Length: 253
Image (cartoon, rainbow, N blue to C red; front, side):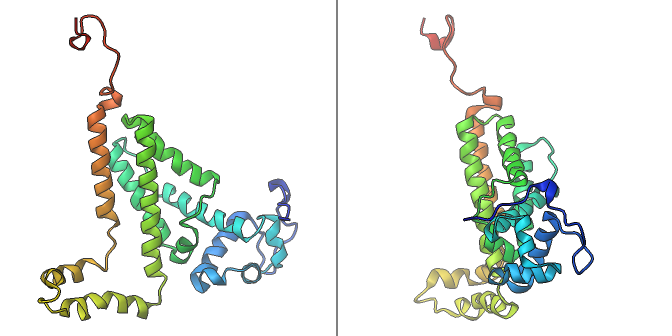
C-alpha cells in the first residue's frame, strides 16, 4: 500500500536537518536534480537523497508518496522552468518556437533527469500550465479545436522526444560521446564511394551536422505544417465552412 502523504500544511519540519536547513518539496526536488547529475537515474535512491539532505530517508515520504511521485515532481520542475524562461509576444508561431526551444533547453540542462522523466505525464500544476499555454496559443491563433489538439500533441511529443534523445547523448561520459561524434569522420567519411556513393558524397556535411541536434529544424518543419493548416482555415477560423444564406453564391439560388 502506498504511504500516506502528509498534507502540505503539516509537512514542514519543526527543526532543521543536520545541515541546518528546513525541508520543503522544492528543496527535495532541487537536491534530487543534483543527485541525478552526480549519480544518474540508477543512483537516485531515498537513502542517497536523504544523505544529501542531511535527513532520514523516511522523511521524504512526508512530501512524496514514493520515489515515482518524486520522479513526477522532477519532470514538473523541468517543465516549469521552461515556462519561467519563456514570454509570449502574441505571434503564435514565434511563441510556440520559443517555448519549444525553452522546453528542450530546460531538459538538456539536466540530462540525467531528462532521460528519467521525459516520457512521464505528471498531472502536476506547472506541467498543466505549460499545456494550457500551448493550447491557448493555438486556439487564440484561430486553430479549430481538433487541429489545435493535433498540433499540440505533435509539438509536445516532438519536444520531449528530442529532449530525451539529446539528453541521452549528454548523459554519456565525455569519452563515449566524443567517440560517437568522431565516428562520422573516422568511419563514415572513409567508406568507399563504390559501395556507399550517397554517404561518400555527403560525408563532410554529415560530419558537420550530425553532432548537433536536429530539433530546431524539425520543429520548424512542424510549424510550417501547422501554418499551412491555419492558412487553409483562415484567421480566427474564418475559413471554416458556414451555412449558406439566401443570396450567397453558395446558396445556388
